[in-house]
Length: 123
Length: 385
Image 1 (cartoon, rainbow over the protein chains, first blue to last red):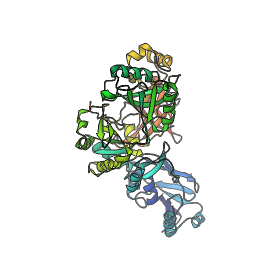
Image 2 (cartoon, rainbow over the protein chains, first blue to last red):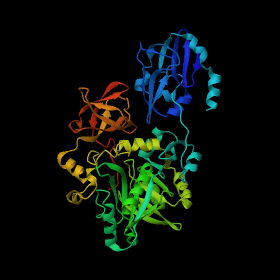
Image 3 (spheres, rainbow over the protein chains, first blue to last red):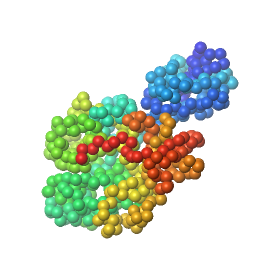
Image 4 (cartoon, rainbow over the protein chains, first blue to last red):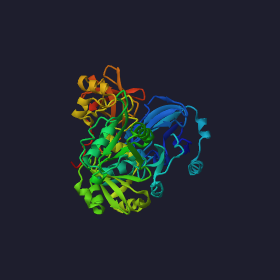
């Protein structure tokens, strides 16, 4: 399994042709307390860099973009009842959805962990 | 995820202190201000349970006084009250010494130019003087109105170079009374002046959270050690603008530029209580024609509390529809209420849909979500009456 990152602070962990997607710990620090996540329904097609989900903190709503194109096959049911999971475990239990990749070559344009960490340090 | 923007703006005397405390800063009302310290949720809850310290030095504290001199007894108060009453619809003449009143600055159409608090000083030597606190984002407008309309008789002194802080929450009384025992003598919307170094502090029992608490206007030169002493108290934590907004929204209190605007009348806004009988009879304030007609015949729209029935917050600008899908209004403030433990909002709806319990639909990201008209406040006020 390989994890990739975007400049918009999403991560995608890829296993075969399915990627599990969420937002990074850096993103949740910026967001603050998450109180609601508007998740995409299974079956929806998403485009790379297009709107995929919306995460609401106490103060504001923020768009979350799809790191790759594909079809949503599942969203995380735990976030409906416990959106704070995004803060508690952004890069594991707080995953947003799983996407079946339609263009796996898009992954080559994303960052690996060390490149993403360096990117965050420069912000 | 979207990126944060560059923070620029004027400083308050406490800006350096906020940064030292690790605040995340934003630009608000032209000032560089803390949006949060440890986190909005934790700060909100701390204020409801203990005592939060808010820097509100960006606001517009000011003094309006008679050019003919202060200390002239009841006649001097009546004179300055009559002057300010040409701009606001409340009973300023009838304020006893040391009493504060929320009121609105009106335009000729009866719309609200700002909401403000006018206090009659407790000290008899100061009759003929009023302490007026206006909103930070509106202070230049408000002060030029005072200067334009009242310049012949009054002098305006801006006090926005001082420190203005609020201490809010159930433990605020103990925190404040330890240093200023006079605090115990005050009830909600009462104010006194306390000698401090060579100057004075104005201590008022009021706030913007729905909790008991105080606002203190403190000289900038000597005030920082006092603020630091408050923050060193284990019951006190610094609170940012994020929690200030969620606290006031749960308390059902209006935010100017959002819930109040030059098109909205005090009747629509649910602020009819700021206009007493004497002023209604005299009809001697700007926009009296519209306001009196709304008082007798009802306003077309009303500010209401709104509770989305699910977990999704509805933000400012969200369209409000009736159950048939017809647009009947718009959300003017909305978010998540940590104490209400769910999404809460305020907005304006057509009068026919303003009754408590009326079902509504809110259009969030193109999809209707169920909601209903809810009584305000969402969290009961905890004022010391």
